[in-house]
Image 1 (cartoon, rainbow, N blue to C red):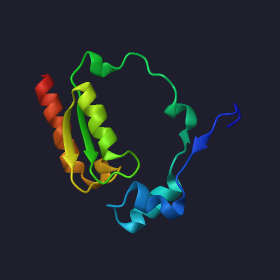
Image 2 (cartoon, rainbow, N blue to C red; image 1 turned 90 degrees about the vertical axis):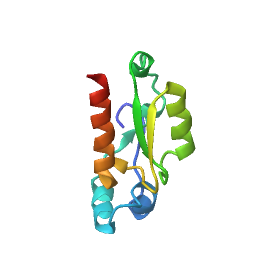
Image 3 (cartoon, one colour; image 1 turned 30 degrees about the horizontal axis):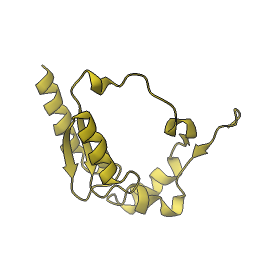
Image 4 (cartoon, one colour; image 1 turned 90 degrees about the horizontal axis):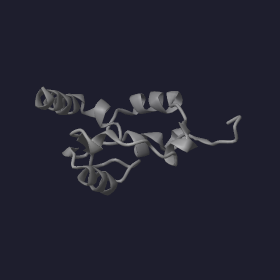
Amino acid sequence: MPDGGNEFTLAPEGFHESFCADLPADDAAFYAITQRPLAGIALTEAAPTPAWRSRPAWAVFGTADRCIDPGVHRFSYQRIGATVTEINGASHVVMISHPKDVAEVIMTAIRTLR
């Protein structure tokens, strides 16, 4: 990057297996060539006071996520006291591969907060 920072992308040849293994190969190929880079600072920048300290939290993740280990998800979500939904066999893009399940969690959160 012009400011000396780094950006990261996943190699197209490993994208399907590592990012979205539960999607069709044609979809994965499209996502691989249209992916946006992740700014390196996103991995190190400190966040301000997180919302979960004062608000309820919900989380959804796939047990076959190869980008963020499911154990890390479990630890993080337990730490913040989130209501957690694990989708067995889902990849990192659980919201694409299991949209109804994710939408139901969102709707449950909305109903809970009314």
